[in-house]
Length: 148
Image 1 (cartoon, one colour):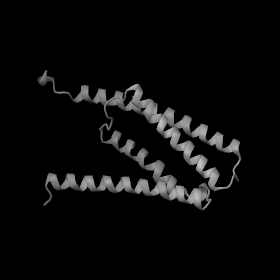
Image 2: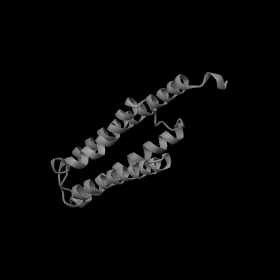
Image 3: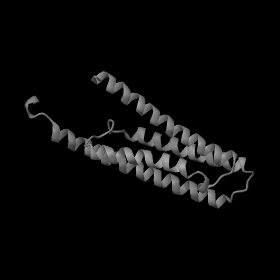
Image 4: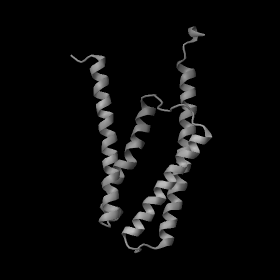
């Protein structure tokens, strides 16, 4: 017989395992891309895991009518998050160009970086706002009227 504490511990273990799988996918992709010079067609499983996992979480959260939105981010925190991601993408791109010995076309790399950063920023901001509004709406809907 499983009690609530045991179920919570199992959920914690499963969530840690999912995070580790995503981190392992990112590391695997970077090693394949930077060291072994593999292309997208050789890294499709890593892409599916890296992109599909967060999408699946959002879909399941909406289906189960829960919101994982944290407190609303301040403009400073949002800007810092965007800056860190942009810096990481640019750093990895420069490292990739250096490891490949300058084989890549500079315009191709700059286009990729610009498109990736633009898409990340747009999706990040839209998701943060949508989840914040959804959280507020759910709090109003499920708020106890007798507690006021």
